[in-house]
Image 1 (tube, rainbow, N blue to C red):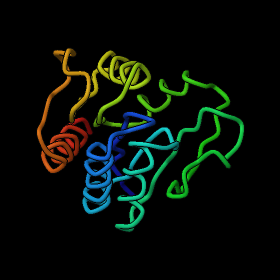
Image 2 (cartoon, helix red, strand yellow):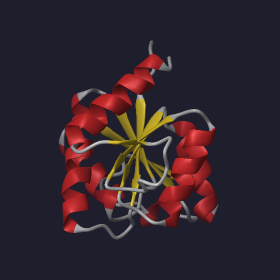
Image 3 (cartoon, rainbow, N blue to C red):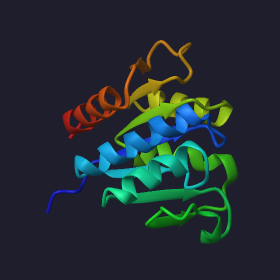
Amino acid sequence: MRQKIRIGVIGAGQASSAGEKKAYQVGRLIAAKGAILVCGGLGGVMEAAAKGCAEAGGEVIGILPGTSTESANPYVTLPVVTNMGHARNVIIAHTSESLIAIEGEYGTLSEMAISLKLGKTVVQLDSWQQLDAAIPVSSPEEAVDLAFNAAEGGR
């Protein structure tokens, strides 16, 4: 049996309402394509994307920074407890086949940099545009199509 594609969605723990709307749509589109959404499992972009994915019938892996599954947002279907704090960003980068960054601060930047170092495609939707290797897009649809195609091509 072929494994499902895993698309990482990374971004601001406290996102703008526009960022949350984009993340929600990204999550819905990931589920519609039959992929699994990988995220940090907390709030903001992570929760909005997880909600969109879960409401569309998709699966959400939440790579949690702490010691308990109780910190996971309510849309995570598979919480992974790491007790690693920000070091969990490495696990998110390794677990995802490609990633979509939406807004975000230094934690998002670290996930993007690690993913790029690993040779993975990183798509950015209103995120760290200073990273030349990450691919800027203007819509959730474009982000998911590009991330999905990159993940499929890497198999």
